[in-house]
Length: 451
Image (cartoon, rainbow, N blue to C red; front, side, top):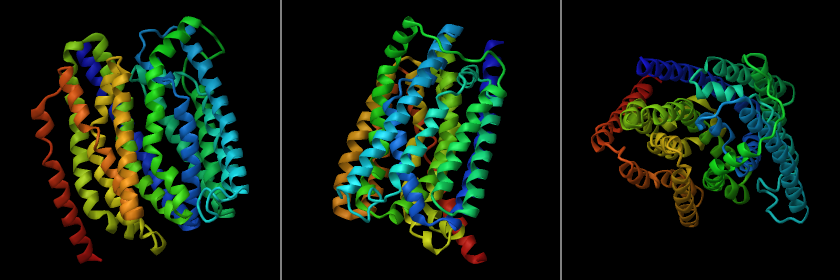
């Protein structure tokens, strides 16, 4: 009976997250198309770089607060509210540091430390960073009932909150851009969306409200659990953001804008799948480890099969159809996005292995995930520096795709070490990428005949 109940909750949660995130990505995608017509490419470049700084501050302060709410055996009121108190403190710390980053950018511009035509040299960037820094400050007050809902795979209202917040944020963005087509439409759309999500976490979700609380024993547990998450998060930022950080100093805002849009398009798909992997995979694997550790291998591959099929097909399909997709969606100003989108699509092959990282977290070994990120970090910088020097901007984009694949051998090694690896199930799904490639060729030919 327990197994049946667990299976039903996993399926129900997966469908809810899939549908909710599908709507979210559709809204984001449509809004991006509209905003691309209203705004110049350089505005997307500015916003992309500002978001990199805030993402960095988020990750440099990440000690796994939401993860420990899901993974820990404790769920008492004192434990939960100590976590919430730390979450609020972290939000304030991020905003203070965003102000310091903005000051650094401002004085760097005054002393002309960066090229005037680079993204770093744009005089609007410091203020954008300060304003975007308000989002994590507001999110720090978000109710822990969202994380606890994920823990219990009871996420219907969480999905509703995410959808409403997305609609409100996008609506703000579009209305602002109609009257004032500037980068501030993107900035304030993001802030209003975060405010909506935080407010709804109290208004919609049942249960007691959070309050400030401190328990030293809980704090010690969080530090013990979170130290490897902190290390992993720092390395994740250095790895995932190296492209935009370096390109911001090397290329103009238009080029970075093209890259940002291609990343947004492929990222929408990755985020849809990634949210399923994290929101369903991590709680499901954590419950399996707690209640039925012998069944971990079976549950792991059952969860991963649909991700394998979708991602491998998409990898082949998008590689072939990238230029056609961009020509249909965007005007001539954005045609350079096509070849970038094509190269980034190769990285979809790796996304299916992210469930292994959630599995290591569920086993209480975040260090293993940190090792994976460190390997990716080293490979990404080596590839990036080498290929950029040899082939310029295009080489840097190939480095992003190549570095994404670098962790796969180590993931397979860890799966083998903990008796989770099944070579038959690893290999049997690989032809799906060929199916996607052929489907892409057929789709392009049909499009060319019809149009």
